[in-house]
Amino acid sequence: MSLPHPALVDLLQMAYSAEKAAAFAYIGHADSINDKTDKLAIKQIELDEWNHRSEVLAIMNEYNILPSKYYEFKFHIIGKVISASCYVIGWFMPFYFAGDLESGNVCEYFRMKHYFNEIGISKHDEILYEMAIKEKEHEVYFYNRIKNHRLLPFFERVFKWGKHAKNNVDLETLEPVEKSDGYCVNKSSK
Image (cartoon, rainbow, N blue to C red; front, side, top):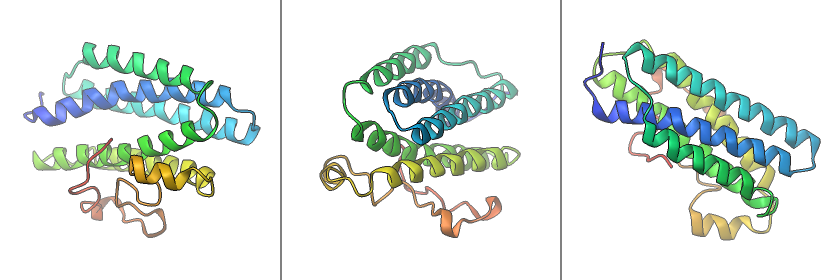
């Protein structure tokens, strides 16, 4: 079965490859810091990203969607560059930009859910919801690590992430999967 939704096919291919970039970035991020608790947390986030990549591939395989060679190459390079940069840009920026990335990824998975629902497919709702919520948990973790840092107000103004997420998901008042259609409507990812 193929998907009659080019934007959804592209989003699946992009997400599949971007998860590899994120995992690579978290390898460098975890290795570049000294705090053992943060190392363990970031290593778990890396594992979550590899798991998301596997889940997206399973969905792609169901619809005979091949990974994009372009996205695979592009995000491989991006992930490796980000990983290496973690050793030279200090402590704050890897946490800030990881949180910013995760904030956008929340909507990436909700957009997939919306796109599938547009063409009458709901069987992926639960896994897409779970991945979106896991990305939100990652975002909250990274924000909590930097929320009192002196550079945060400047970065919030310049890069537009911080107190105001790129998504409207609140873990404190989380809607169940069947009532989650209002998440990330009119929100962009990344």
